[in-house]
Length: 105
Image (cartoon, rainbow, N blue to C red):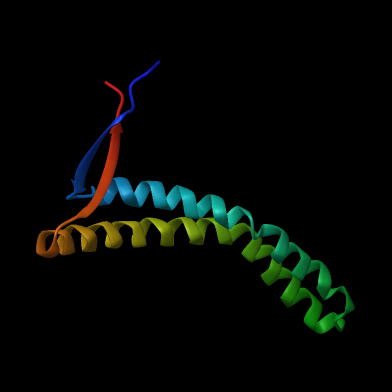
């Protein structure tokens, strides 16, 4: 029978901004892939519009389907950088987030 894990309290004092930016950029870019069908449905839904309006809205729908993951990825990267930098600043003032880590030694 294994002994129960030892619980250790640690404080997260710093997050590397570039690392957070890369991870959140990839995460948000991937989430941007999920909304592609919505923009394509919008482009398909333009079939009932008058011909003069149809092309513009169809182009916007298809264009956003391609651009959404890129835009989401860029925004995720930028806000990941900013969020980590702000966390580091605030953690200096009031302390970091306390976490409990189980050790299985």
